[in-house]
Image (cartoon, rainbow, N blue to C red):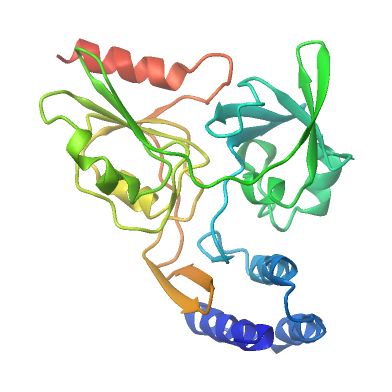
Length: 290
């Protein structure tokens, strides 16, 4: 499919879902895309992300294939603090990214405020923006490092069992199906979806505790709301909806069709890199209810 045909299909679907006609915005972007020569897939995807961001719908996603940074960050007043490392082990939890591609985080925050949904600092989600960058300047204690950024496939899920509970960590909803056979029916489940995103259906397990964060987004947010479990952590990304998708050659457009909401925890605890208080609270809760 040609780029402008894909754009038109996505634009028509947005008009249908939002019940709007925005010919002015459509004209601006279609003119840009028609000037794009074949074979510029990365640039095309980035233009499409910019176009979709015009509508400020957190449940809208356009991608060729899903990629992972290999780590997760929280925005703070000092930069981007690494709170989770899963693939790119050059990073360490607690690292502070101060610059991306030689631009300060504050500068990028202003430049990409539309792609950040104009969210407050403590709510900003940077994963897609980091994928646009070439390298990162990292402050670690008194040292400074420069890392060339890489792309990874989604990290693997895991089940960690103790005598008292099992910690089930997933990065995408469909991974619950993959590890179904590893999950015991005899031990309380702490389901960790703090870094989970995606729109697949979720395997019906019955956790005692669900760990959530600002990075939790997609259909997993609906699962959290409906689950009969104690929810601990931060309010979710805010893309809670029922999802549909259209496949356009090698590209996918996913979109929420029932509006957007945020899932909220029963016990709010901010996710700090230095001390995983969310997990510690969950373990104490499970141990006290054995």
